[in-house]
Image (cartoon, rainbow, N blue to C red; front, side, top):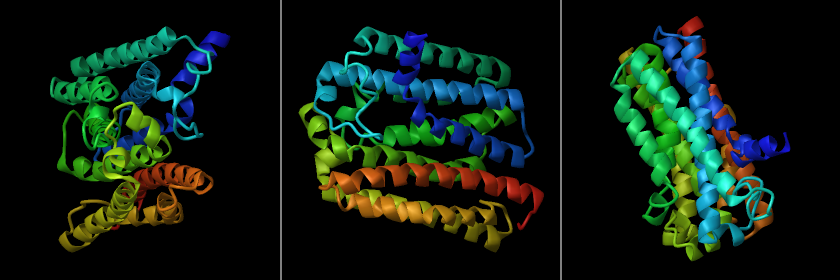
Length: 306
């Protein structure tokens, strides 16, 4: 039992709530457009959680192999699980957790290809490449944050929509853009405490390659762009009479105080006592914004404004 608990901790379960929120958002969009399959939603969500946990475990494996895990300043939001460098979990077992969870997720993906159609294959291939190549390859190229933004932001929503509707639509692609930006920013800000360790490990994250000031500016601009995107889509809905994004999506403004705290913290990267709370505010902002966006589609279904 103790070993099982350690394996679960290696996936960093406290971060997997992002996958649950994405499942809620993707399912809400599919339901609004007339398709809802509880079993498919649950199974796809479980596969997404496994994939996310696999990324975390594999990342820990490569971080320890490269020596980065021995250099990082660990916080509640960054720096890995800490189980391997603390001697609580053998390195091979960390890799095993990553491999097993990814294989189970792959099996779920194969089921959905058989059940819902081959058009899911390109999405699964791209997602798998993001998963497998992220730590050993993508993190050593400029601007690696695009990968989690795509693989854990945009693609999950497209996949959740597809497995319930059997098709892709431009509406869900538009709705997935904020998630892509938000997950990009989740990784970007979490890289701030690790910048020196990442530099020594040969990574080319945005803070390492372009400096903390530029990375902070990018973070703030991307955060603001989430609201601009949502507001622009709502305006397009009102003007055209075609639902681009529900008017109710403006309830995402309720998350603005957390966004402001995160943006303020990105300016104070030299002070860990101020930076770390901003990492927490960023997590809340990201989860709350996507949850509210999912709620907007439900409200639009029951009380249409468009």
